[in-house]
Structures are given as structure tokens and as C-alpha cells.
Image (cartoon, rainbow, N blue to C red; front, side):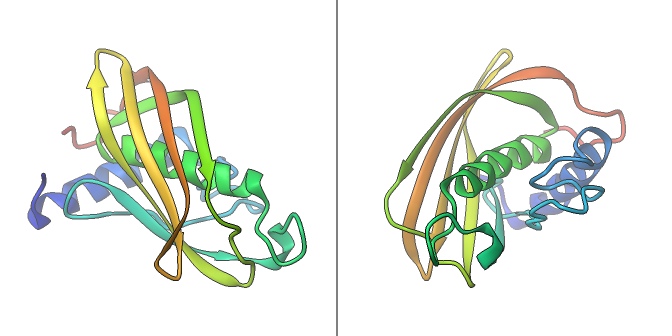
Length: 155
């Protein structure tokens, strides 16, 4: 468990790594004008989270956020959690449970945390909540591609 004083260096690492290796990402890339752009923040326990407006242009069925968007948000949250810890990895496996329909034209919160780190394999968990209700969960396995940029603050 990390204390509040450790969140700031992790937030700095998140920003540096995301800018260097992920700036065009469709989920979180600052340079992708058509991206989803959740603003991930590191929490006191080392997880990341972001509020996301579920715009109606992202619906699948009427008034329901498309499942692919939900999957992208959960995967993106886990990737940003890795960035916060100075890790660059790609998704090797993604398992999602859709528990409830996510309504459009409302805000949802996506959160991710690091569960296990072994050599180059990382296992993470994530969730998406709306109005306090758990709507979807995910687990992911990520394979480290390379080390973080030199300017990143390591864990």
C-alpha cells in the first residue's frame, strides 16, 4: 500500500511514460483527436482512476455504452496503471465480465490496479462503476516490451 506522498511521483511517471510511448493511443493519447481521453490520476494506493463521460455517440444499443468502448477503457486503465509504475507492456490476455449495461449521457469511473509482477509478466485488475454500482470488471495479463523512458520515476 502506498501513502499519499507517493502518489505525486507516480503521477509524474504516468505522464512521462504516456507521452513518450502512448501519445497517439485511441484511449488515452493526447495527440489522438478522436480518442476517448480519460484523465487517469494515481490514487494513494498506487491504482489509477478516471471519470469518463459516456457520450451517446459511443452507444451500441440505444442509450447503452458499446461493449468495445468499455473493454477499451478497462484495458487503457490497466495500461496507465503500468505506466504509473514505470512499466511499458502490451496486453497479452484480457478477460472482461459485463455485469450491467452502462448508460450513455452519464459519467462512469474506471479504475485499475497492479495485482502481480513477475519478471516480464504483469497481472492487473480493473473495474468500471456508474452511480456507485459495479458495471464491468476485467483482468489482464501484460508482457513487458521495454523499460520505461529515462525521465520516468521508477517504483
